[in-house]
Structure formats: structure tokens, C-alpha cells
Amino acid sequence: MNIYQDIVSAKNKGKKLLAVLIDPEKIALKNIPTFLEKVQLSIATHIFVGGSTDTNNQTEKVVAALKKSSSLPIVLFPGDANQITNKADGILFLSLLSGRNPEYLIEQHIKAAPILQKTDLEIIPTGYILIDGGKETAVQKVSHTKPISQNDVDLIVHTALAGQYSGKKLMYLEAGSGAKVPVGQKIIKEAAEHLTIPLLIGGGIKTKHQLETAYKAGADLVVIGNAFENDVVFLNELKKQ
Ligand code: 1GP
Image (cartoon, rainbow, N blue to C red; front, side):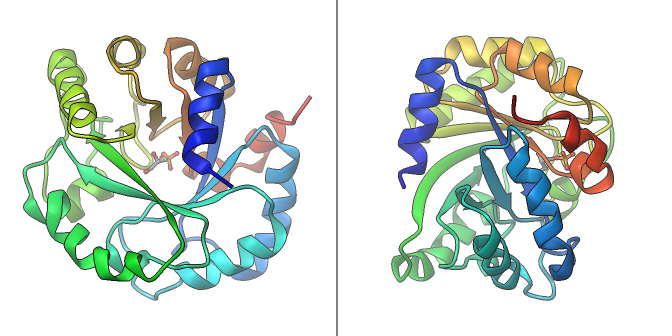
């Protein structure tokens, strides 16, 4: 499995990708097999696992359960270095580029380095840009950083470009989990036009229309968490043809 190369190939072919985000703090282990059955029937291409916090250290157990019943790549999307487990296939090594908190720009990475060195995880350097989604989100609270306004398109694009120039292999524009307003079309379009690396969009996407709008604007991979947790009907609407 080469997660990154597969994302790049999909981008080059114009094939859109969808990640189902599972928050280990929210999913009950016993519900995983049934949930995964629906995921496998859908157009989802990846499973991301992570949350801003994992107080009860559920990540490893959840990943192990997912691995048992799914053939999709399982990618860690960790809020901090404690959420790393070798049982997954890869990890988004995230830098919170919209913020100015060294903890999420380099400190957590230093803590993670010796752990990662002992794993076989595919490490994917990813720029992470928090964009105002109309409510204070967990990332904002935990990271003590402010999101960039949706009106500040230039700042978002310049931040993303700076990330690409410093070697990030993916760029994730995030409105925050449960955002009222997802990342806007204009932002996605501008970012996609300026970047050459794959573009990930997430936060507050709850309908097929919003998903298609994000793809049309230029998202290569969309991440959906809350809407699938709360509403399996939506997941069923995204059945493979
Ligand atoms: C959060 O972008 C992801 O980090 C997904 O957000 O849970 O709102 O879909 P939702």
C-alpha cells in the first residue's frame, strides 16, 4: 500500500476521494463492524482516525477493530502524539500552519518522532489550515489558535503555498469538526489553482450537495466525520454505483 502515491494518482486522474473520519472518543467498539459495512458499500476511499483529544486512549483499540473489518487504508489524523499506533497504515503528520502555537508547529512533532521511528506507518507531511466555520471548534480550543477568516482568501492561499514550498505533501483546509459553514467554494478554487499538491477539505460537510460542491471547486479528498456519525442515511446516499 502506498497511500500518498495513490492520492496523487487519483488527483492526476481527476478521481475524487472521500475519507470517513472516526473519532475514537465517540465510536463504541461494538458498533464498528456494522458501521464499516455501510462504509464499504459507499464511495469512501479512506478511513481517518483521530480527534482533538483521546483521553481514554481508545485509538489503538479502535484502529485494531477497523483493521479487522475493512480493507480501506486507515490513516491516523491525530490531535497529539499520544494518538499514534502502529496498527494503522499511515499518519497525516500535521502542522497547524494557520496558528502560531509552537506546540502544534513543532513540539508535538518532536514528541512523536521517536514513536514514529519505531513504527512502519507511512508518514505524510501535511499542512493544516484552520478556517472559520462559524463556531468555536475543538481544534481552536485545544490548540489555542485562531482560525483564518473565510474572507481572507489571500492569507489562506499564501499560507497553503508556504506549506507546499516547505515540503508539505498534502494541504488540509479545515473548517473544524461540526462547523456551521464548510470551507467556501472560492477558497477551495483558489487554493486548488495555486497548489500542485493534493487538497483536502473537511469540517461541517453534511450533504451530498456540499460534498459535490467541494469536489467541483477543486477538493481532491473530502473528510466527513460528524454527518456520518449522526446520520447513516447520508452514508447510504453515497453508495457505490
Ligand atoms: C474534522 O474535517 C473534519 O477535523 C471533519 O469535520 O466532523 O464536521 O465532518 P466534520
